[in-house]
Length: 218
View 1 (tube, rainbow, N blue to C red):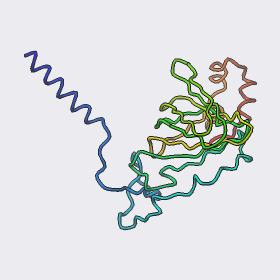
View 2: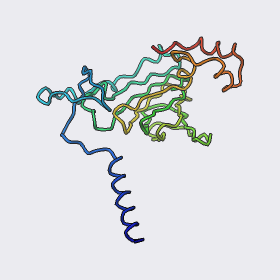
View 3: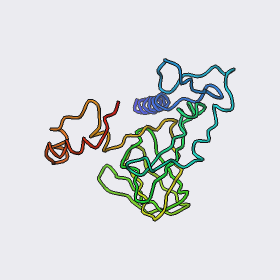
View 4: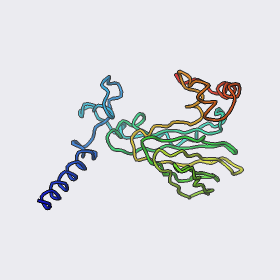
């Protein structure tokens, strides 16, 4: 009886594991139909007869972003499924990060992906925070690689004298980005002042001053 119960438990665990794992692809490609009104976990597929090489191509990361127009001194250029429809269902994407001297890519999270970066040029101080509040930080030079675990708060800060840039790769076709400051202080509708005041131990006046520095999200 005991052995039968153990066998049942093992089979049940195996079945459960199979049920919650990502399915294998059922076709060679599923180029995203970005114009479709159908909403699924990803994008619906374009008619295979209309697939072209350009669906799998982008030159977007070849050119540095214009950091002069950014209030934080940083520009992130994405190469995700919204820019490269052929990435749909493949579970990978990239981006380019350009940061002016003294600029930052502010603390943020990617809710759907782990990130790994390769420094193209410059000197970056980077780090992430564990759920225990520990900062794991390091200063990177050209050619260095660093990993930011999925959904943990992280940042990049240009601490060099010249511009810095890096290429980032993600294990998601659309990692998503939530900037901590702008999400909390620039949301629509706004988070009540009383919530932010108690959370950050500051006055309502201070909360409103910070909110004034962020454009509400539309």
